[in-house]
Length: 99
Image (cartoon, one colour):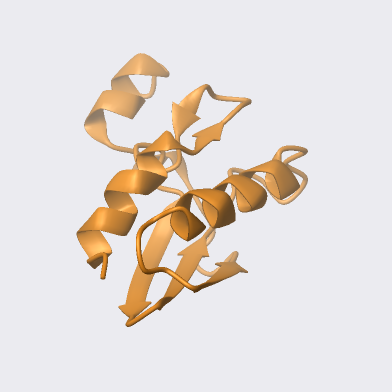
């Protein structure tokens, strides 16, 4: 069974195409819960009108589903709390000029 850290590490391959960085560095990944073969993922987007939203959700599901022993992936898009640039890693802030 994958651990929470395994799932988070795998999700580093999911990029926000508008910003060209992964959702983990951007702070868009809010929570990962692993319950045996089920993985629940809470995430947000940089804006409500983000055109890449469906693509990001699909990528999250595909990446999590590809992990060994994962049978079910549940994603939840949330705006609570709303994403802000403060949630980005220091590297992402520096690269995108928020540092």
